Image (cartoon, rainbow, N blue to C red; front, top):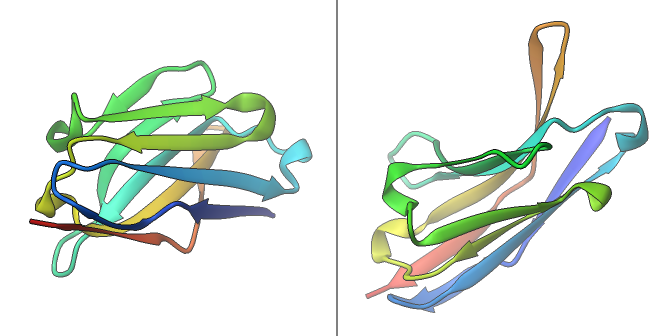
Length: 121
């Protein structure tokens, strides 16, 4: 079993910055974490991809955060970070960390409890 834990959320004014951290722990030594990332969900909206990164370093970003957010990863520690700059009120949401493994053509997802990010205008 893999546990995913986020930290670093909070409140900030528009234009400010926050850094989110996430760690995957537990039985990670028997599981290869193929990718990690961040998703967010605002009230009344569906969960959406913010950013993801594979073990090989390939990144993917949601269109609304490109150029403002940067994802990075420490493979050795199964940790992922999200640097958020130029925050906007529309970035307000619950942010969830995701870790996944790929096995025999299937994807297995592990989720954290989430952390709130609030951006005031």
